[in-house]
Image (tube, rainbow, N blue to C red):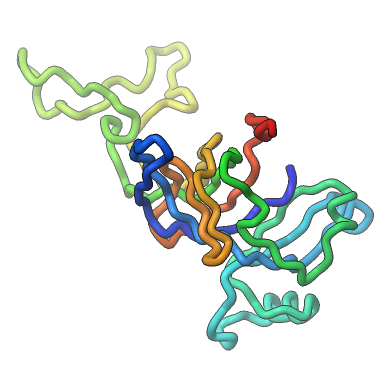
Length: 218
């Protein structure tokens, strides 16, 4: 998969491109991220690099297992830890304590951003799945926003799995793919990507190189 970054969504803004067009962008504080642990196929069964982001201010709030984990790496504790699957060559090229920032991306790159979507609470089928609802005339009674029948007759005599029904909406892991990097500001660790990304402001996200887009040709 390759190494990526952990970031924090700061919000949305807009900038003007070289043609004077308005481009909506999401501002992400990406990095600095620290290599906390290296996992190898010989020991853990797979090759991965664990990185941390957003240093903890009040050390007394870190529990003992986490404190020991960071002490072993001789690093200050961070609020977020994420793993990235990498090749054996990347394992050798990275050392515990190495620092990564937005400089690994360039304007014009395409990235996939993963975050936790905004929670909407318990929602009905019209809001959750886009149902049209029942007719509002011709004798309809108290069923204007209902989902209608959810099953069949004696065969199969049950509600099928996956039936779209009311329930908890949002607060799920969501990935938005193929977002174009508009600007990289290394002095402030800000990454500007075109369009929207999952989650609320101040929510943590993971930024990786797009898996469905090739790198730009020079």
